[in-house]
Length: 115
Length: 114
Image (cartoon, each protein chain N blue to C red):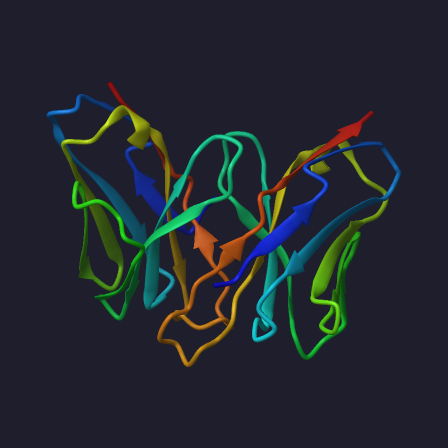
């Protein structure tokens, strides 16, 4: 089955700096890569996703890049703010015709943005 | 505001109790999920329902019993749980169960088994 590795497990940055979280996946057939943000005591929320036919996607201060050859994808947050502090999970899945769709999560990165 | 509503928010139950967790969505999504999340860990998939039929059971112990009464509702019936079952139980929905359908999570039920 799919295996997703996520690094680092914790990341501390100063407000205004950039933050980068990296994930690798094992199944070359995976074609969908979402990122979820989970604030303390709250639900995971989708913040951005990318599909395998795209190399990069950006939404304001957040961007995701995908390297299919190397099987890794990264989340980039620019101009970080204290409200960006949360646990971030990457995930991967493949569309196998709808029969056994399963999202495999990385272990998460605790991002702390210091004012 | 979340579009997936879960009740109760908190639940404390003894090992001999029977209780149910409830989940509701009105987005017209046809796939619904139960996840279990332990502290500082990612969500773990338990069950997937697609078009009101059980599609995936991730080898979950029989003390957890899912039910999908209709396309908007998903229940998780709990019986004879163990203390190690204490966790945050998250319901999620998606347009369908394919990889083109992002998951929308509810706020979860925090379960404590005593």
